[in-house]
Image (cartoon, rainbow over all chains, first blue to last red; front, side, top):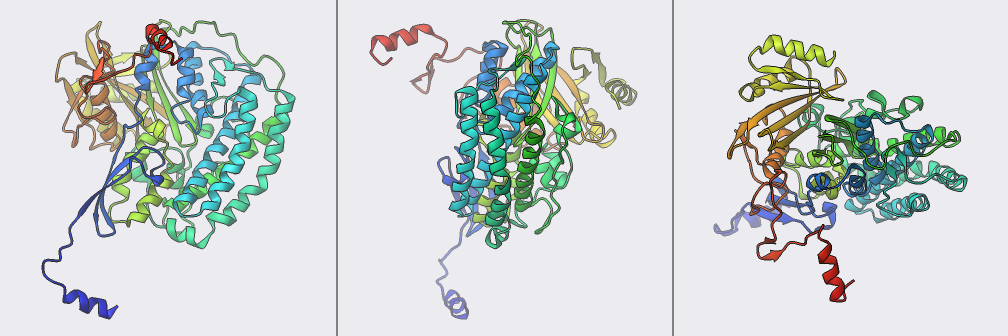
Length: 383
Length: 174
């Protein structure tokens, strides 16, 4: 070390160290999609990281104004393509509230079971890709192996593997069969012990902890100011979950806990805290599915909603708890068959907007760790 | 605390700023004067415990004619959402004071509203387009927006045109 210092002392005066402007993305393995981050670096230190979004923009809101309410449903799937079921449920709930439509109990059960399965699938993806960001390739393979089983269940339910168009206004598109119920039960039995295995493999791995603790800290004040929701909020130690606090569907009837982080490995609200909240949430989702899967009531799976959905004149702001935070729809209806204005506030859009603030002064490798822990899906950021 | 309580407290505090409420179904909203919106939101955050900005949207009403900015303020303390609505004249360059200094979430949300609806936010630190390319012309969520045929010389595909499909069939692509 001493010799290097001596060597540097002898360096010619024209050897300058400048700040460097680097583009990370839009095509980059650790930006989780087409995200471009303009980084100003000083050596290995990030001075400024400005996210540039919009590469996947297709103006969902404009499209929604040109189709009827039911026609928006398949398009909503494409917002957060890793959690299509949750998105679609959010849209269905928003429109049902405007219509005052009743959803049959059977449909509510199927919806909650399916969206909790989707939450597990989405968190598995987050877990897997986060491992990949940290250089742990095995985690990625494990996560995808198990997510595949969920996709298989969804395929038999809806016919599609990624974009399901399964939740319809007033219910679900197809009924669930005893065979599919058994498949879900098998999955729950299979997957239950796996979470602990994943925790051993990645979460409590020394290298992983060292990479993720004390960086990308989102404290509660930042979360409130930036309007962050979901895992970010619970990762900052704030116990808030729409499923519990402002419950919708049949969530009040099920028993589950809201996991919050406690700053176990370092500072409260760091990357590791957000990771552990996701891992705990998967357990709670399994708990919800277990409680509901045996008691799916008989009856219709779709309520009596007319072929043409025409909500009365009015406006509604609806929020649902998606794997990445609270997805909000603000719908303005003028009484016609098409929505007058649809506003979609996606959680990822605000999550990624914090990037500059929380990554100033960190190493470039930590920037990757922070982006991974925000768990963004660019389909939802750009809409 | 209910919506009515919030409305009354705001009305006492801002007799000029609060223009009234409208009982739209299912969510009612409070109408706020554009020049007072910053003060009202600041009071909502600091006095009435509305910790977070849930959503910021722009709505175009060419029939009225008006442009509206809707602020959905979220309170974790009271477990509720209150929409505030500002109505602006539908003229070029019309704007309202930015609330970036109150909620940082407003930074990107206001940029998006400027980009897609074309409402200017005065005092915003970095009011650029965010979702559309920087050289995009017009604001797509205006009701009178016409989808351009060309973007930088490249033809824009028309999604709802049936003839486009038949043409491709003729060429043998279908």
